[in-house]
Length: 186
Image (cartoon, rainbow, N blue to C red; front, side, top):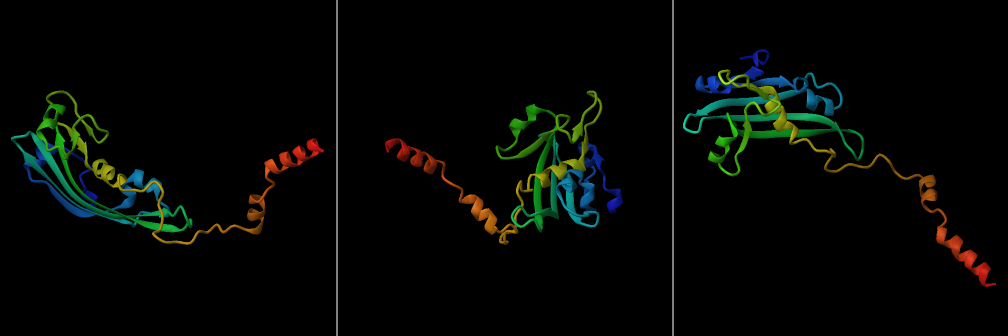
């Protein structure tokens, strides 16, 4: 499959039975929520994806396994220059049909209940669940993005000027009170 044929919407159970796998590169611009947090053009910024679906028929769930790597150009909050943030995620996510199946999972297993998340929808009882694979992968990358991106070591752009220092050394309001106290005692 090429990047143009990345399956944005999938039926997880049907596709897992068929042994779905996909490897390729997508532009970071396809991940709209991440692209809004970046600076500059991300049209040619690659996101490397390797993913597969597998079925656990006994537990009635599908496992999504994915390795995702990208670099997100963001603004450093210290120096205001561009900092490349590495986004690397190894996803192992259970896609379950209903909440009753959650108790069958290991305590630390990550899961999505189909039909309850933004990335999936479920119609009537007979209709299969449809999952927005791109949104699921983007959710995993969003969890890695820092709230305040910074270089590991950078110099601050804002260095205090003499005026900044003078403004910091304003009169102490208590000095005024002390001088008033001196006048009252005399």
